[in-house]
Image (cartoon, rainbow, N blue to C red; front, side):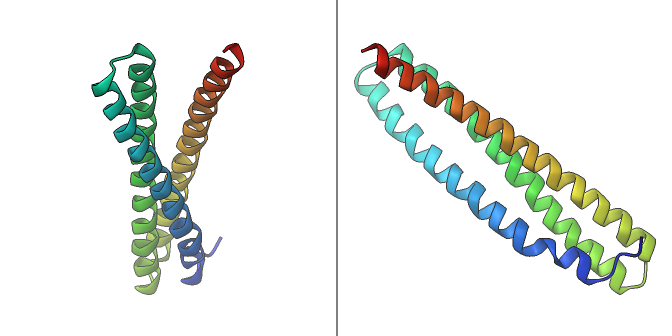
Length: 130
């Protein structure tokens, strides 16, 4: 398959929006961690500590999601440069690696969402039991 200069460029809007969504998730979780940390400082509780531990895992996943997304975007640019310089094979390979990194980022996103839903279900269960 021949990869043209515009093929990697098609991913720019998708990756940019994805990174924006990841950043919003990160900022939301950072705010939650700060609030829970303050609550824990005021009234130490094992439930709060467990929630903070869960959020710490999610922050690590989001960091890795962002990392793979950014490297994917960077490789798209490198791929475009290689294609521009008529290094077609190199450009195609780099673009393929970029796609794989984007897939890894998306898989990590799925895992993070599953952890988030699990935590919400535990919270809802606690509310139902009260």
